[in-house]
Length: 283
Image (tube, rainbow, N blue to C red):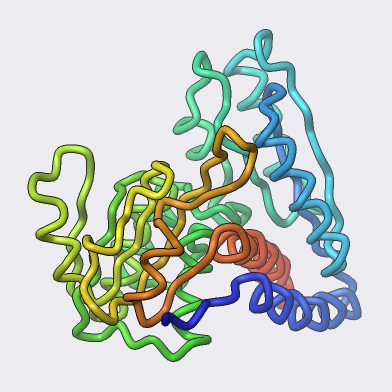
């Protein structure tokens, strides 16, 4: 039976440490502040923003929310708001909650967020720094996964890591974060053939595809570490991951649950990035 990687507990431990760090920064006259832009009324996005606000309150980070109309907001208005936040010295981190309405260009928006306030790690400058192994803001979900590996002493060096999913938000930065730890990476996606043949070779399997209970026990090898990044809502309203947890936990060595796994760590690492951004101003 696999060891459950408790993301909820680790996230709490992380926030407790950040609370102390936040207080230290405040004593130097800096009040860490996060600005979140929400475009439209996507229900899931509203929940995520609410959770981020709650985490900010706990850590001691000031939180400012900017809500834009989904249908009528223009690209120019979105870019103008980001540019104003870039210039506002009281704001240390800027986050654009995705998804945004299809008529808006999210990539231009990410490019506009100044790199030293890009706490989501999506500005091309920070993506490039990650690829070069330089100090930068790492996307919060991959960063959370890496912290889990550290906490549970799961070694990546020399290991075969298989990542299912190639999104800009999770899959691609995970490739680089694992590569920076000297893992051997294989990336699978919707065009991959003989998927099970590949997943069965993984020492560490990371699923980030958004398909409920897609990964079955027969798709992994005995003793594999299984990280479930997926969050899916079933017809019964319950949250499920990309992994068939009940079956896979019998075969894996470590496994993350959904909920209570990667999700809480994503928000904890966002808090970490905001404190890091505020700390840049200490000197």
